[in-house]
Length: 289
Image (cartoon, rainbow, N blue to C red; front, side, top):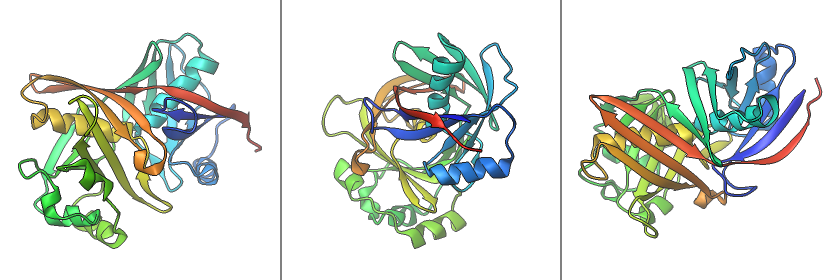
């Protein structure tokens, strides 16, 4: 079975977030796909299902080492890149059918962009101190006039607004507090962000923390940054504009620098959330079945 490895949201190889993409010629059992994902041991692995629908539409399944996921950002873009490179060269627009529903992906010059589903802006969490303690921060490390809030466009996040990049750099997961937080507050990853100290005013630094065996942080997270975009426009972080464009720098603390481009608009209560970035090929091979 052919497989490919790409780095997503990367400027060059060995940056961004790793992804393995498999192209089975015959259907695989869910158990085998999970075993392969566990063997690869990247944050996510995707499978382009056989019996392709044509017309630029493909059914795709996404697995972490622990479970199947309804949606994830960097696997969506990385898989679209492989479809464009191998299965349907020259594609500028694709639709990937994921468990969360159809996701449209577009190539604009050297970047791949996805449009995410309408967000659910959920509970504003009362336990600000508890949320901060998950990352071994103090409550005064948070921006006081922004909420800690649950947001989801398919894969949920709790958004944690930090007052400085210095606080962001101090984040360190307390696993016992994280487990308690998940039990008492929300089943979600935690997205901490701060305005970048260098560069333009529309650049953010982001870290995404997850509670999964063998993983505590993601180097580049498309779904979580889509959640963050909805939060930012809802709470007017960049002012009262109904359309925001900004850059996210993520993964620096992990030694895998990543760059994401984000656009978000809101009109008459409806959101348009787009996350994009470059995809860099790394390897290809044959998986033995």
